[in-house]
Image 1 (tube, rainbow, N blue to C red):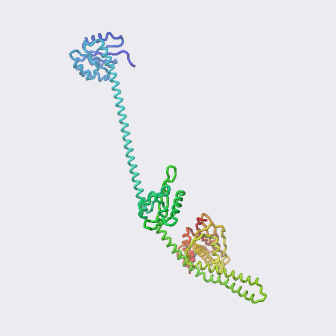
Image 2 (image 1 turned 60 degrees about the vertical axis):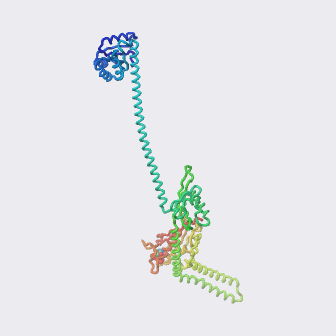
Image 3 (image 1 turned 90 degrees about the vertical axis):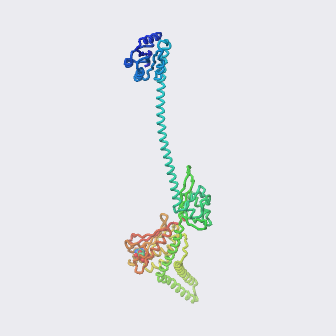
Length: 535
Ligand code: ADP
């Protein structure tokens, strides 16, 4: 709490100093000042220990006044000190001011007003200095705090800069890494913009096509393709990518600068902008030129092999076919004979002759059909691909199968679905598969009693495939045997190529073939071919 009375302590050994101060302060408002006096510094320090002092008036002529000055400041550093000097020791007073005294009074010279003002100012100055010191301390503190937070900020900034630099470095590395992958991967990479125009290509593209990136930028993939419908292909291709993000169905022939042609299989990835619209499309093209050539070679090899196998099958079936043809020929001979006889009769019934001729025609047509079938079967076909209904195909080959079925006392049962999706195949090759499977089935039933020999052929569609099943009532395939292996045979005259060729044929159309045991304990060979897309 602020005191209203100002306590003054005079430290002086001179009695006249107390008298001087008492007299100069005598005119003051009573109760405002309270004057104490001590003769030496020890007593003054003691006094200060129990009484709060507001100002000290200090006799400069005291011995060791500098030490005394220090002791007062030790007790209370904020205590205002006024030194009391004589006229002769003004220099000492000035020195005391340097040491921190607030003012000085000249003994006997300064009047009551001056003394009072001096005391007042000394206290004010001390307060002011104290406030200044405090402000300074506060400022120092603030500066310290600010310096500390600046240092922290600085450290954070440094860390952030280091982080940024690391991220930038990582990005650069990532970029270089991606660039290296793009340039070293053995695939052609094309970046298309949202309109399907080339924006960027990788080095493999440049080296494979002979075009420098700059030469193709802005062109469409259709322009770079071979073929009359290349432009259309380009549009269709890009449309498909945009709407399905799947180019994997697409192959095209890319025309290099020197006219070389590359067959490429494409896959694509779309990059979207913030609104979700396609911004870029990255196309990755695998060069499958060699693979395609190999496939063509393989197809030709399979074609030759299949042809050889068909010839051999026909050779094996020759006797039965001859026998089969013999029947209509014998029938024709017999009908011709009866015709001749009918014509010899004058009362000839023309209706009878017509019937006989019709029968001759029917038998001749039937023989012709069998021969036509055999001819097409043994011909080295160009392997034309057609849309085929497998139920119809089975029905069509039944004539040939029937020859063997009949000669081996086998019952034939057909369960063919009428409305089957079409498949895209070569008829002769699939007939060959069917003939292999049915002939094997008939062979397998050799040891079974005639009345139990049943050959069943059924067709149905499921899961995007059209299935054909050939069931027999034989003993089933030998356990553990891989019957599809080339040259696997259990027959004394067999060569073990029928199933291997059948498997290759079915697989060449993207189909599959397998064998399992049927409910009768016999073998069920089934194959499935993918439904044609344009059904
Ligand atoms: P091949 O008829 O010349 O032996 P395949 O490749 O057609 O050649 O048949 C290989 C073997 O698979 C046959 O020898 C036979 O052991 C077995 N096999 C094929 N079909 C059947 C079947 N329906 N039942 C039992 N075994 C069969």
